[in-house]
Image (tube, rainbow, N blue to C red):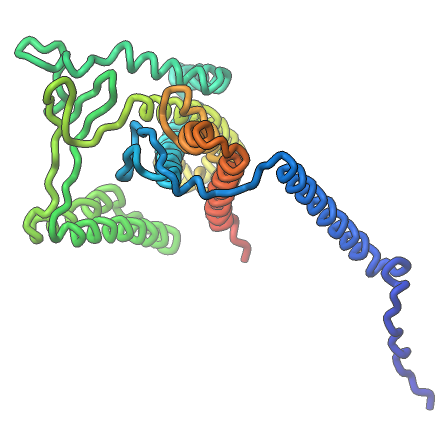
Length: 404
């Protein structure tokens, strides 16, 4: 009886790295990687040699020196005797403030405009089209300057609020909109306020949990539970109860006119407001087109099928159309968030001191450390861009169609 056995395994030879198709592609990739490392090493070595010959050495010791300049808008304590490092931190926080506020407002406006672009009402549809075409076809720097000029020229000055025959008045005795900036009440947190804040954030988490439960109930059993008023109750009632139980630990400081300007409260300079508004309405025009494209990508049969089940138009949009459209909308919206964050560097045009104005502006000019400042600027924008991409890509993966 004949027996069969597998042929003996062939031993590996170095020549197989070129002759064997199983290893050849890895060989070429490894050689290309080595060549890339060698090229980068040569460039860095050449840079270090040229800097040494020019008498320049890369050092970040200047970050510990006093900055010697003031910053008009700061989220943390800062004065002219603070270090350049603290000035850079102030610039980072100012940049992040504009980016977060701008992305939030641009998303809301973009989604609303994108949905209204498909409205059956001819007038609304055309007005939204005019908005999109005007704002996305004019450079954002021009919109920043236009809005800044409008705030400065149209809004009253603090002196106009003075006297019995004042030309301007505060809104509800709490808000003042002036050519210098906007004033609003400032919360003051006393003992026990941490409990109220914790309850408020727990209420927000409860809203998301309740909305998820309502959707699960609808999809599994077809029961439609109320969503709006329970969400409003969860948002306010627990926090209000905790506020009174803890003895009203949170009070408000209202802006008051004293001397030639308002004092107290939260002050947002008109440079911040104009930059925020301009970036938001400019980016919202692009997001609106992304939303419109995502909605049009959904088959009309989805809408007709949902309507045949008796769902109202707003329910169809929120439960059927938008969840499916998000898979098309999110990837281009990520790019718009990145563009808004990088466009915030135009803040120097209206005197808003972001990171480009502090580290890349005054600090660079005072210290002469151009290479170090530019490297730090590149590192920051690279880091924040990668962070935005990571977060949004994780959300995009969560919204993907789950196959059984």
